[in-house]
Length: 578
Ligand code: SF4
Image 1 (cartoon, rainbow, N blue to C red):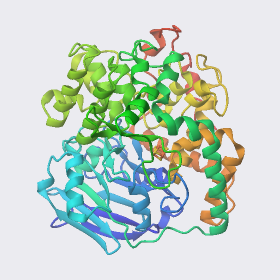
Image 2 (tube, protein in one colour; image 1 turned 60 degrees about the vertical axis):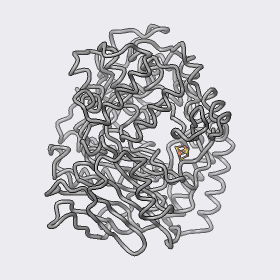
Image 3 (cartoon, rainbow, N blue to C red; image 1 turned 180 degrees about the vertical axis):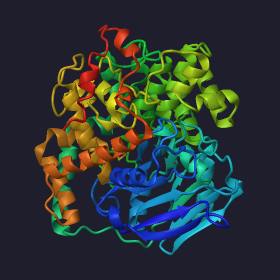
Image 4 (spheres, protein in one colour; image 1 turned 60 degrees about the horizontal axis):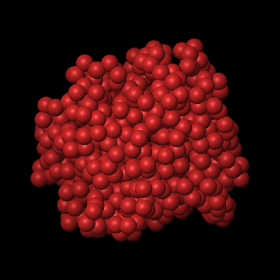
């Protein structure tokens, strides 16, 4: 991974590519690399859909090696949704494949001169870019089927659906899984719209004939990886809960603690929770011949994913994740798993972020466009997005846009990005992360749910403000570092709880790079990434006033605990004081 593939989409006669040495970005991967390139090369005040913005696609530092869990990919740009810097992270196969092809990153830059749509194919022999207007407005599943027909079954794809081509602010970038299905997404912040603005529909990767990437110290690496896997498989969350029920194991847990946002963040419990829980979902999947346990990329040992079949036993979608089940489920008052699975499939196929879309539908329901609980209306809303009707374009622009268009005050967004599946009044630590993350409301940026609710890696009272700032700060630093390694964030449960598993991770990184890597190295890397991101946002015009939750979270109490968000503005301003 010593080179960067730069594709100038505004080149003469169509996109032109250039392979350049990694140069000043050496030693960086994943989020550290995407944020470094965006921060340095993209003018912070540029229009996100203009020629000055860039899409940076970077496997993690350890991707392409034999390290378990190292197949996450980071996709960065200036976000059309938030106006700030963005790193959206995805599983699937592309990180491993791109890394084995030798690329630290692909950078899409410039402004297309025509409306032509392009596909990019990369294998051991090099890069081919060709115009293919037959791909216009193809949904992701049809697109990937077409690519398999052209390039064979051993490919991995990075693609956009119609929403990306229409440059919607909720548009995602799809990554194919091990079965070459476009079911994993870099969802957040409208990254798909920026790829759409570059007129690149799909990047097809084939690493046939390419070797695994080798660490500097193979023996130490192998030993550390063994200890790391043992730690993951012996922890109750990463070894039992997530494999058995997927991330949706959280539905019953969040509902029981009163932190499950329901009816557009009006209450913290949902009567229909057990009908859409991870336990019910796993039972349904197994009974219909799907899979309750499945890995999204080779080398994943947690395997939190699954395969969801319809009532007739045919593939419908991958196992919808907790955030998706919540966004289209309890948040919209929908308690039917088949409806939610169909919404998940439509989101993936049209190429939109399930969290943003679920929130947009919930705000539309609050505006009176449909009743809460009306699954058919929700499905029709997503079809409107895919068709690009005027209503669909409003919905596809995200929850904040729907609230503006229909005069709704209660838009659960920070920096324009919709909140995930944890109410910040009942889980105050995640509220601090929502408010202050450079990404906008993002649970993955500093998952305080672990200590607030799951009591993993510490115990901080979820209903009280005390200790939440320090917790979120430490988690945001650690997360920024993990996101740079290519490791799936779910390793955090085991490394937070088990010092020996954390040490194994440090040893993997150290053996890969041929250095002694310590906990201080993790902290330094995380701080460096966050500093670059906050610097970009400051240049884009963000101030302390943007590090806040919408004011109704401080005035409107949340049943059943009847709590408001109690962390003060002064405390929020201390998150990045280190
Ligand atoms: S734990 Fe889940 S999200 Fe993480 S890599 Fe494995 S299947 Fe993908």
